[in-house]
Image 1: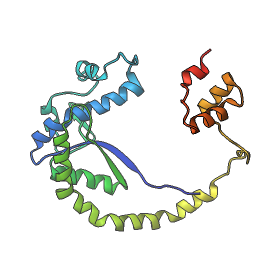
Image 2 (image 1 turned 135 degrees about the vertical axis):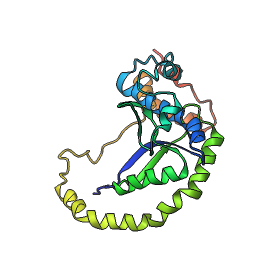
Image 3 (image 1 turned 90 degrees about the vertical axis):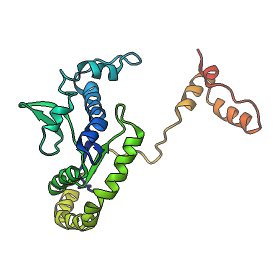
Image 4 (image 1 turned 120 degrees about the vertical axis):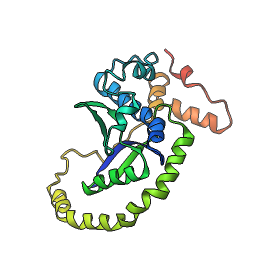
Length: 224
C-alpha cells in the first residue's frame, strides 16, 4: 500500500541568454507539441498513415490559437504557460526564455507545491544542438538554486502530508475480486498455434528448435 503525493507539470522549454533567440529556437516546437496533443485529444480527424499533423499545424496553427509571431510572445512581461494577447490565447510559451526568466517561472511552480517540472524540448523541428545548449545552460545557471533547497522542501512536504497520507491508506478498500492462485496467462502466439496445430504443437516446435532444427514461421503455423 502506498500513496504518491508528488505533483508533476509539463511545459515546453528552450533556454538562451538572449530572449529572442530562445523564442526563435523553441517556440514553434513547443506550440507543435501543444497542437499535436489537441489534434489527438480534442479536435483532430486522423487517418493513420495519411494525416500529416505537422503540415496541418502549419496551415491551421493561427486559427487554432498557436500564433506564429514571435512579437506577440515578446509582449509578455514574464513567462507563463500560455501567451495571452488581446484577451485571447496566442499559443504556448512555457519555459522558453532566458535563465533569469526561467528561474522566476520555476519559483512560482515551487511555491505552488509542484515537485517535478517535465520539460518538452524535442518537439517539432527543434534542433539537437540547441536542445543540448539549453540543457547545459540550465544546469549551470538555473538548476543550482533549486537543487540547493530541494531536499529540505521534500522532507518538509513528507512531514506535512504524513497525516493525510496515512488517512488515505486507511480509507483504501481492497478489491473484492482477486486473481485465483493458479491464474496463468499464455503467450499469444502459443494460443494461436494451439488453435491451429493442437495442444502438443508448442512442445514439438520447442524440441525441434532446441536440437538445431529450423524455426517455422508463425504465419505458416496459423494460416487458415
